[in-house]
Length: 330
Image (cartoon, rainbow, N blue to C red; front, side, top):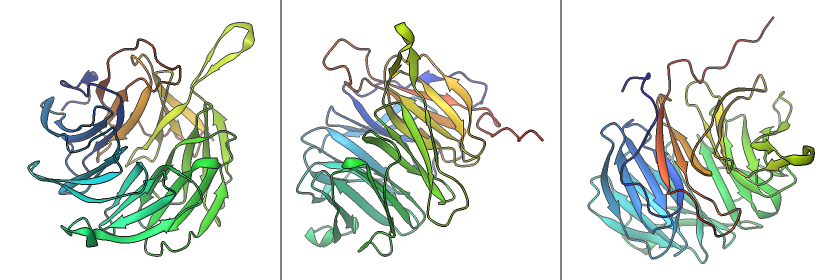
């Protein structure tokens, strides 16, 4: 795929709210999408083709995760499902006592981790075909809103603006707990690719860049995804999605203003702004090489029930240096 190509929509998108898009960890062509229409879909983005879909869930699917040879999904029906790489077999791995809100797969440890509104994290042996697939249950103080794993580090954003950081090899106790520096509920959290900190976003148009204890870097936060209105008052939008570029470690944010922004966290600058998506940006993900960005444009109901554009998934090819941070001026 030429990087000079313009962005394009995937054919046969979900028919209800898109909760998550995730590229395969190695295969640049495969993209997984979950939706409130109870389905999980697998696309070939190069051919712009829907390869397969499963309807194993009884309610909205809130999150998905990819391993090298299979995928996982969870949602409002509280069930955790496995989908084999050939898209033939779907089976239940286990379940939570509440809705499953977040999933992560640690490729470094071949570990599947689920988070739920039942105030627990659970780890699973997804290769086990019976009830013994549950490896551990970790109780947390609040409902799980968002999770991110990088290497051995797991970051979990909870209700009440709480953030807990775990080593996935020792999940009995977090090695760090803190309150988000943002004053409103957390919408998304992502660990930096080098594991030295994380970025989180709130429902109130702000993003925080925070470093783990022992880092010489200073935490900071900034306003974004706002539009000027009358009387010098800004319209403030939730920041729904964050994704790090796998090569350059810059990151994108997506908001309910329909805008995607590219940021350089070290130089504290916005590099680019991609505008004009039909409605809220609900999810973002870079392909493994960073040559493509998947953008889910899907109304997130911050203004309640109203007419809104159809749900769409856009694939944006990136030029070689598009996400590269600019050198500091001397």
